Image 1 (tube, one colour):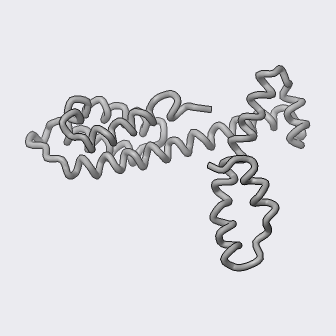
Image 2: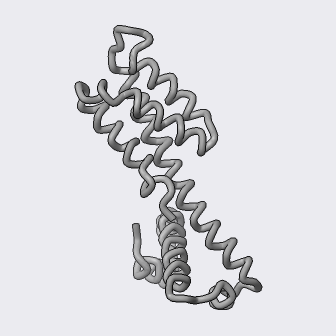
Image 3: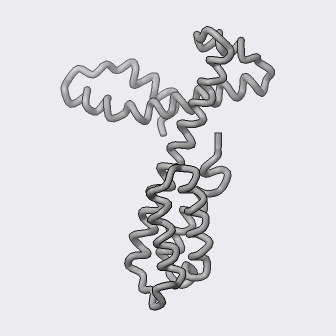
Length: 168
């Protein structure tokens, strides 16, 4: 992810050709993410240092302290959504690997986990997280004998940790 210097460089270098404009546009999502992360961190640091929401609102050019609080909440929500998106991708990868894994007993852990993952992928974020936890639990012993499944399961489990999903 680009740092603040990359953001500043990108803003200073105005695209002059079609190709450079397309390349610059491709960087916008990464730069937006970096700026959101910077803003969230600066707000958190200011609050930890004793700044009031009114002071933060003034610094951000917002009219009210409530607007500053809402902005911080939105920034946190953006990151959580990105983490849910990562979980969705990890679950899809795990499901693909499970599809290639034989389950001699159609009621065994692979079948159960695969069905739970299907439900998770169709569920809203909160339920998706809960269902992913159930699928991960169901696969615990099975993953030990299948290295690729184990690696995909570790990725899902890492994303289910408080640092993965709920990090501010």
